[in-house]
Length: 137
Length: 137
Length: 137
Image 1 (cartoon, rainbow over the protein chains, first blue to last red):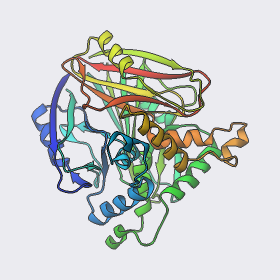
Image 2 (cartoon, each protein chain N blue to C red; image 1 turned 90 degrees about the vertical axis):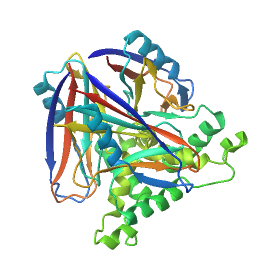
Image 3 (cartoon, rainbow over the protein chains, first blue to last red; image 1 turned 45 degrees about the vertical axis):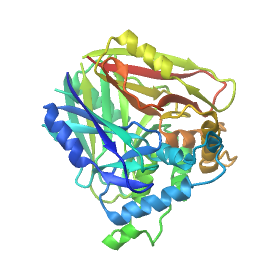
């Protein structure tokens, strides 16, 4: 089994931001030399997510509004007794999940026609890491 | 490492439909010859999901009603400016996630007693693909 | 490829309970001898979840309250016609997902500073199983 590991670091300008990282996942695959296998793309912080969906700005704004409705910012989360104010960011991360697996076939990302890999920052403006781990042969 | 890849195509009769694909995952495993490893089962479209849960019709109807409540059809999603009308299908896909990993032990799906693999179509009546990728030894 | 499989059994005292299992995942990794690869941590029952997030009691209470709001206990789920009363436990499991992949680098869990692996019991007081499967080299 061959494996290759990379870390991306994000420091977004806005508190919430959704970033298409499909190109970086492709670059990691190219370096790995893997032809058959899978790539784990996983946020290393607990207030961020990773998803696979459409690269369409209207949809991204819909997702943002929808997440705020289902997991809203509130002053009175118990978590805030620790001095944090990001309780909603944790809930948003749980809701969309923090990782995906991208299959690799014939040396390429085996994604459908509209599938793009997104890093979802829910508590930005500070350095956050993500791991890309390619495994296969 | 041994690997085996299959693609399933669905064209459901209804707009939303939940299909038990455990048998097809077992068939892919049998073809692969893998005895120890894992199977990635992943929707290749961004308006479909994959989950592991119970094969019980009442529960499936409960899930459908619940998803419509949390991620409802609405006319006014920004995504619809593209000409689409399936904004809610994207949100439902994000909510349930689009993939699962099924562990393989001693040449069989290592699922619990009630675990069944489901393909969840949220925008059907057209051809949609799913990848099954078996990896192991 | 090297692989190692373990099963944990939980019988929680309360109906809902969230248990930090990071230590057990580390123990399984140590037994496996794997230095590069991944660990699948997956609930084997359909009324439980697995997530990676913070080990902070206030947040865990926030998560519990939030899940009850998004996927509430109700008497009238169709699933209850089977004699069960745990419809909400299935929905909570779907919402948080039932599994995670933990990356392994240099023989250790490659988690971020605050990432901890949790087993989330949504229908406890009976024996439930979880699989830990380490794969790599």
